[in-house]
Image (tube, rainbow, N blue to C red):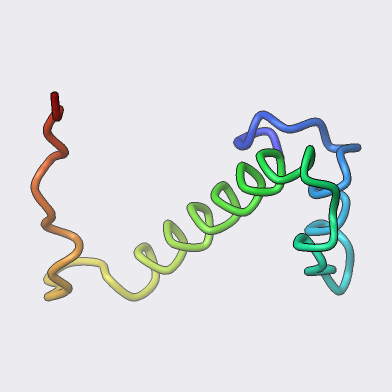
Length: 74
């Protein structure tokens, strides 16, 4: 949760850290949506990093590893 910047006691953080995790984020009040999004993005980022370290080391051919840098739009 430290990576997301969300307090560990926030509802979305508690839900994702449960064993097994609870996935009822859509049922949370609208005020919790941004917090939920931040928690989920941080969890997905960690999972993707682990996946890359395990399965995509070396000569990986996935095109998404070589995306061009984002450019600013007016």
